[in-house]
Every structure is written in structure tokens, then in C-alpha cells.
Length: 298
Image 1 (cartoon, rainbow, N blue to C red):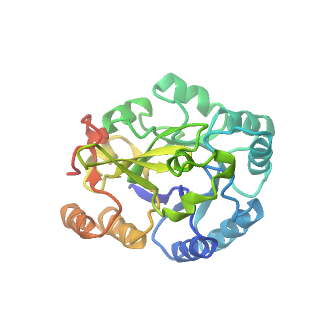
Image 2: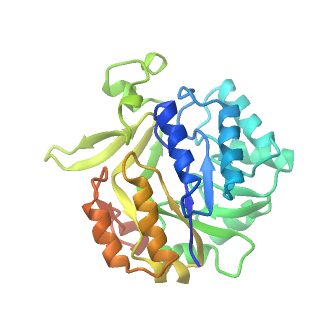
Image 3: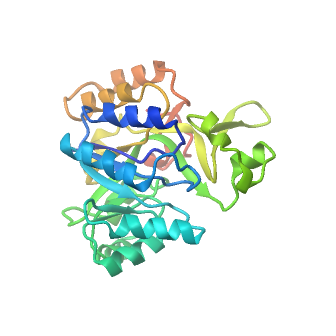
């Protein structure tokens, strides 16, 4: 059975909106929730202790909670935060980069999740990382489902999680693209990414949606949607389907995925309703089936 998980919030939402969002998720039909700041340490309205408090509340509501580390660590302050996340002993950790793996290995923190930004693209690499104590692997988003199944054939001691919904994370850079767009320096960004609940949309010269800027992260403008791939997900041995939060109608997105994967609902009907929602981008699934990533979801 494929269960649902919620990935870390990738955008900077106002504190009250974020707290309300996770309060609503306490009653949502999902098994696992990953918390923490993955993109930029300047997004500091929610401190480490705040994340712990949210995690405890969600755990009390019956959710399995993991804490994420940043995908690109660029300062001593960020490294100190990474150590705090990795060395706390209340919740498992999702490693965002090799630095997190090193700290987790020294601290002997198990279990741990291998996050989607680690470069794990074959069976041998997964086995090497599993030796560090991993019990879950989030496949890189550009892998096809048949490739995922070959990298982690079942039965396996490591659960496979794939990116099931949301803008695809494509790259990280030391430069803040949002600040640059507004002609600001990164260290004086005026926190402009708070203005964009789903990132800053970029268009091609022909006026087509192309990318989204999210601080130092570049994302796809389109949203990956694997709601119609139930059979392929099971064949690939996928245990968890990650839903990445967006700024509007996300709880309905969760309900529709639950209707398909937990209640046996019609995937095509759910896909049609998803397309009718005012989501921040069109729905695609090309990577999952060895097609260009922007191929329309089927």
C-alpha cells in the first residue's frame, strides 16, 4: 500500500499561516510529515524550538514526524543549526546534504531519511548510504519509476518515497535569485520571498510558464502529479508518496490523493478535479514515465 507523506514547506509563509497550516495537517489523512527549513536560514520567524513544538503536537496527533536539514549549508551559523537538528534525540532526521550525513553518522542517530537532494542514482550508492542507518530513501525527482524500482528492489530494509505532488526542486545556488530579481543584495534581500507564497514565476520569451524562483532554489513552474500512477508506484516498490505544500487548496489535494490511494477512488476523476483547482501550475508527470519532465500528467 502506498501511504501519503507531507514534505517540508519550501516557501516562506507568515508565521501565523504556517502554524495554522500544520494545525490543519494534524487531522489530515497522512502518515508522515517532514518539518524544518530546507532552503534559506534567513527565513527565521520559526526557530528550532518552534519546529520542535510543532513536531510534538503532530506526533501527539498520531503523525510520524521527521526533521529536515538544509540542502545547501553555506555558513558556520547554518552548520550550528544543522548540528542541533541532527543531535536532538526526539525525532528522526531527513538529511539534506552530505554534511548532515556526517553529523548523523558521528552522533549515531538512527533511523534517518536520505533526502531527495543527495546524489543516489544506483543500487550500490543506496547500499553505501543505507549503512549509515537509513530506513527511508526519497528518490531524486528526475528518476523514472522503473529506475526507482531497480535502485531499491523490494523486499528491502529501506522504504522508498517518491515526489508525488508539487513543484519539482531543480537546483540550489549560493546566490539568491529572488533578491537578484528585485535588484537587491542577498544579505539585504528585504525578505522579498515572503511576497510569493509559491515562489516567483518566470516565463519564457513566448509567455509560457517556465520556472519558479524560491530564494536560492530554482523549481519547475509546473507541479508533478502522480495521482494516476498507482500501479506503477506499487510495481516500483514505493511505500510513500510525498506531497509538497502549496499556497492554496492543499488540504483538498491531500484529500484527493487519499481518496485514490487509501479508498480506491477513481484516479482520473481525482486528476480532473485537481486540474479544476486554482493551483499554482499545470500538472505534469513526464519524469516518472521516462518522458520530458513537463509532459502533461496522465
